[in-house]
Length: 119
Image (tube, rainbow, N blue to C red; front, side):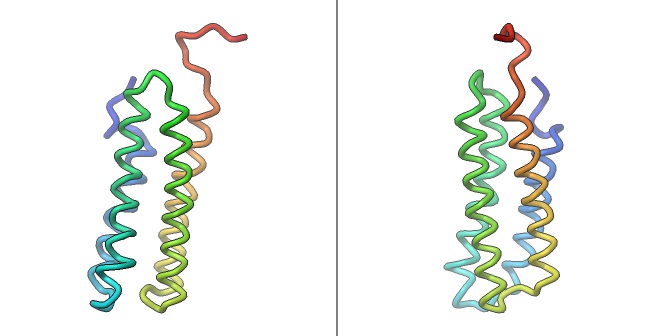
């Protein structure tokens, strides 16, 4: 088991958190506390789920939740774009990161644990 902070998926979730924080600080005040806080909370949850999956024996439930939260995060970024809170380029940057997280989570979910015999 690698340290969670050394995993590429964790680095991607951290990069997404940094991007989200920078985007949220420029949102209109009335949306910072609704859409902005929700985006921030979802990004934090992604990092938390990566940590939990890394330390769990059965990673699949955490990875399933991670994939669900990736989809919610993408939806929130889409909403922010449609409301003109972030630009299309900023949306594209966020989606590139969430897509990477989703691919890595799906790949991780598909791997069998090394300690279990293949059936």
